Image (cartoon, rainbow, N blue to C red; front, side, top):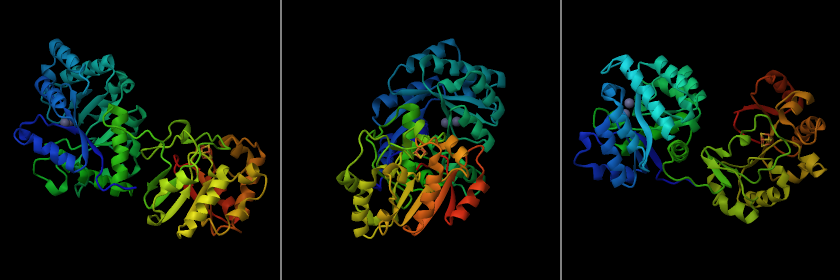
Length: 462
Ligand code: SF4
Ligand SMILES: [Zn+2]
Ligand SMILES: [Zn+2]
């Protein structure tokens, strides 16, 4: 499943910079060889915007953004706005940027910077393309202007994000992405890594900001897009993921924001997270949980999970490939896997023959669905089962999970958990942290039922 060459996108580079004069062909080739498939090269003034648009037209992997950096805000006038607008008509010019505020170097007066920032947000809204925001020591004014100008309507990214977690959350709430550079590899930057651990990966982009901000191994040297791999590797370590996962998810984010690159829209039946392989076998469910992520988006960790049909045994087995490379194979799906009990039994038998460890993530209502106790059928086939308990009483459960079986469902779930212990070695009751849910009461109930207890992330399913 994992490809040794990642498919990364450098979402912020300055390839028009004079430090790339002679060897640009080699730099682009090196990026390709390192797995950096696309590069978004960013304008800072009229000339660099024109140059980047030309580069994007000339080199297949390149795209361009055009705009006036706050350093050059004083040079923005009606004529240059018109020229930027014309550049934005080109198909590979995908964003307005970089624009924003820089109160560190103060190369243009603050009010001039603010006017240019607002003017270019308006332009982005006029042409319907996202914005790339530069913010240095100007967090509050950047947030205020983004909100006042309703920049969230076109969306965009805060590049080389330098705010704290509170600011990050505000930006995410407004619909923006956050982009990080090689600075996350620097030994002293623990605070950024701690923050990154807590931010959702589906809103993060990676960039080099080359020729500046080389990652640790090349610090002090000219940065270039091929070095993005070091930043991606660091992000993978922070998130406890593989490089391929970070590449797929951040590239997907770039696709969603800028339309750069291509995504695989074919539904994923089997996908790897860490050392486990997850099997997506149905989108149907007996519940309609208020927190179910599938009601917003079928993309999980960069995988498209909306099935156009339910896969059969052969399709599932061929999607798995060699099962022995995983610590655990998990039947989950963006739906209730035990609705497909027959398929699970068939596939699990084949996997057990190969010595695999098998887990099922379920809502625990299979006995209502099949109108018999199905747990003895899992005996010897399933090593672990995670059952979504989510509440400590029937009323709360039904409010949250909205089972099609109504109020009897909660008793069915607790009975299922109790009976599961007789047939499956490792039984866990799980819950989602959702406002109004009593974690302690759930934990106590799990204890009473004699099963383990685990709090799930909001966007896990099952
Ligand atoms: S969270 Fe799980 S149980 Fe609830 S509706 Fe979604 S898939 Fe079904
Ligand atoms: Zn910048
Ligand atoms: Zn830049």
